[in-house]
Image (cartoon, rainbow, N blue to C red; front, side, top):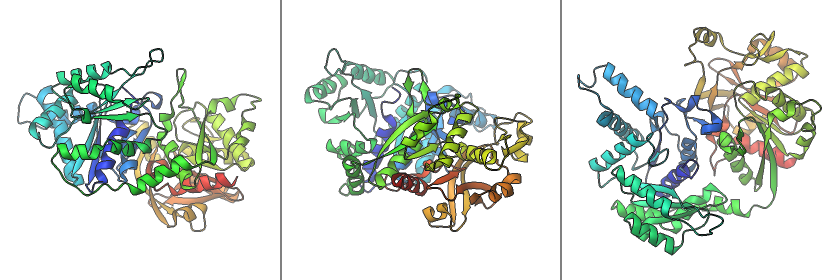
Length: 529
């Protein structure tokens, strides 16, 4: 089921295999008909992660990159839509030589081709592949068929791992294995027998449950790995190794390797567990509500980046979700409560909902010297706030929200306007890695320690350079520019503990043992407050 931990399990398996001296890459297969994740709703699907090449993909790709410490290429992400699109394109180009193109075998064969090409490009010893969705759904049956065919093609090289949840009903108090038994039988109906089961539950698996799963699912007890709930996802690789999962995998594949080396990872986890002092961070967004529940996955990479930086400074992050719309109400007392936070983040986003609330929050942070970090939309709205309340441009806005504003501080570039006038939305986003030239002496330059950096983008609107001189004259510092197109990438304010906003998404490049420089400096300023 969604959220059971397939992505973290995939990343963790990759990590423990990597620790044995093998090179590893990872693939995410999404069952959606969307060609990529760019048009998916964050409150339904979670965060949209962006790769260097500009591919908008599932948040699990971020988990893979963070755990493995590598940058993944676009070919490592596929959806039902992208596979069908590729097959149809080949058929139109007569690449099937006039054959009747069928769902089976041509769709599964296209999936296998993608997998093999990803391995070839990465020159990897191992590839971990996550098939999204739930066993038994119509959506992923073709990907399961591809997996079955791949095993048939290379029986000695392919292992299947099932991630299954074992509930412990409150009124009963006993861990139930029956859902896992049914999951395995459903998987069997697709022609697949799992080699390993990762038994997810709120508590560790006992011997009795292992016995039941083994005898009913046609496997050995040692092939059932306990995967209980834990405080931090970064403990998962270490938990897997308690059951000697990497040994089990290598034995099943008849491989030998060096002794496992997870020392740095283990030190990081020890830090997480032993940190006592906290730092309190508020994240102001709009993608939190999903019925009666809060969905933190909408800002997953931001959350993990805050954690990486906080742990670096030996602090336990206390993160609160702040609904931007609450700050739009007249006579709202919510703004005054912001003083309790050591730092405030306004992350990326799209649309008009909550915009004025975010602008009020930014103004409050600027005036009250609360460390502020703006990401993408958070940078654009910081410019709007500064233009309105410091430069006297009361009508200042972004044309994303007010197309007719006489003071378009944030606007589309001319070539984007031409495309949008023809209802061509594709190609109007600045996606993927772009260079940024840093100005010496700025907070950003001190954080990075170098002049030229590369960061990932996902946005359509840009800072309007027609207003640059005025805002700079009034005290806005341009700390970073894209050298190819003279686009504003980073703004700062002096005489403030920390007021930095960036047009890119630094959260996409933060790792557990290597926090992003700007998140690191933001948390440092928050601790000082």
